[in-house]
Image (cartoon, rainbow, N blue to C red; front, side, top):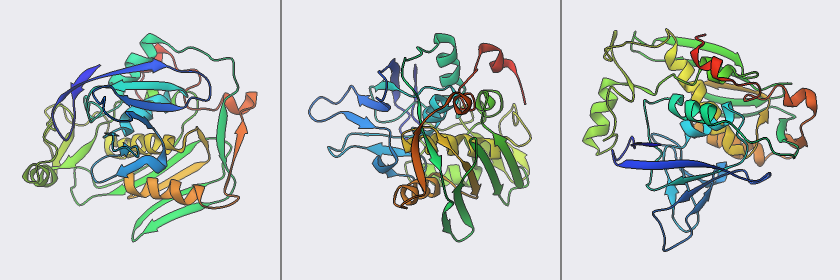
Length: 296
């Protein structure tokens, strides 16, 4: 896949390669040859969350904007992969996970002869900062419950709850785009940020108006994209999560702080081998090409 980064606008090539069981998700910066270029896609490697989720290793090699790709991997049931990338940032594509999902589904997956391990939430853990809330609590399946509120009437207040089992991500969230306000775009450009951002890779609103000629893909596209981001950021736990995630005005920083609090809380979770019943409830199980044409 080839595309521009959101921050730099630089064309970047990216390949998703199969990996063995228990490998997890790793990035390799193939353009870096003078130091360690492998970066584990893990919550404790998150180095910045200002505009996106950026990860880095101890040698300073980094990859920015990993959340949409991580969401695609989680939503398609990819538990082990090596991602080769020749630049500092995952291509933004259209601002969603759609292209990544289409490439994964069309290529297909290799089923490994090894059990899947999951992270089961045993007790509620919460991160709160003012009116921003990110919370994980026990559940038999991965459920995402999100609420946002913006002053622009084009967005306003949006709420949604989704059980992520049985391909729900592919059908309902994968094509929902990054969104921002026109004033935010102007500020980012003034700071030399978001140089690859335009109406082709983000949903931009100004008061009551949606500036994209094609409008919103769904009336609640904005909260759906927040759920997409949350799934990608949660996948940095290193394994599929079985639990209920609640986000209120939350973003990348809040979800990362929530994971750090989770792993620092004794007894809050357990790593278990998936039984057959639980495995059938994971987000990527049963995903098929027909899901790409369904609109929820």
